[in-house]
Image (cartoon, rainbow, N blue to C red; front, side, top):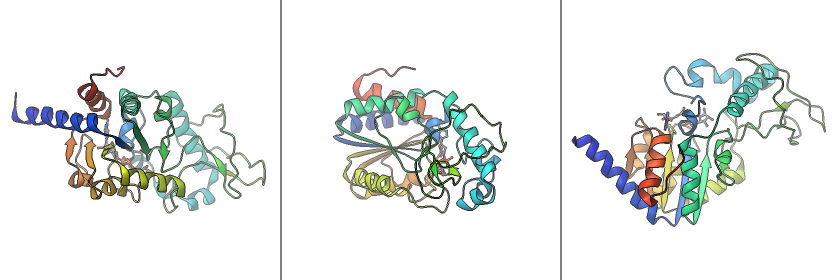
Length: 264
Ligand code: APR
């Protein structure tokens, strides 16, 4: 076995050992977690959403004020893609970890519902959700559209009106320049502060304050383990960097830690 493959095998074994001994686990995920479910990431070269679309015209409060139909249409297009997608073995492995480790908190930057559909109870959504629209003026929760009016890519779709104040309804996601939901951020920082193991999966670690979460755990002496095919700025705070796709590495980790099989 080549040195590199042997290194990989040993890193996976070490990570599995940490996982098997964990009492308080945090699983922190980004767009790479859902990539193998067919959901585009943001910054992957060529395929990432920000390589194809301009976040200044789609993902800021100003963009929504300037052209609500363009923005609403884009998020409805993304929500339709999520509805067609299925959780991948990586999502299932995360749910399996929670069944094994007494205290597990899933913290995600993703606005899809694939963790929930894989069986993870109450993941903390730091950047909101595509399934929690609200009024852009009075913040009243709005019903999730049934998706009948599924717009094609780049198509405009007028947002519904708030049932309480008739202002346009906006997607329930966090846009650039907006603060994260306070309670979610507090819960995430506290979980990172208290955990003994944190898995960071499929995030470039470039967007703050979310990217601070693995660093909080590392500063507190927690074992931070990264799952990502590529290097990221988080490498420096990780005890182990497992280079590979989430839907392959996470089931392998569960198998190595507890012998459990995760459905493929
Ligand atoms: N498995 C694991 N990781 C993967 C996979 C995969 N199959 N495919 C890609 N990745 C990795 C990439 O190497 C990259 O490091 O996932 C990461 C995705 O990074 P981004 O696209 O930057 O996504 P993320 O880190 O979640 O972005 C953070 O930025 O645009 C905002 O609000 C948006 O929540 C998002 C935030």
